[in-house]
Length: 65
Image (cartoon, rainbow, N blue to C red):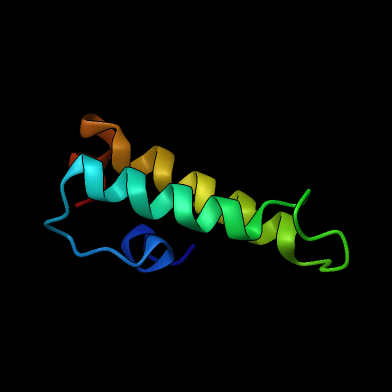
């Protein structure tokens, strides 16, 4: 798995609000319902979601760092 920071395009010092904003922007653009003709949209959306879940949880984020 790539770094969740790289996946979301945020710095390691990013605040939760910044992480959430980056996630929402990427999720909207890569959501499979918005990209019917793009076969990799589902996997990209899943990667974005996993990165967000890791970074938004303070305990998981601390263990990752």
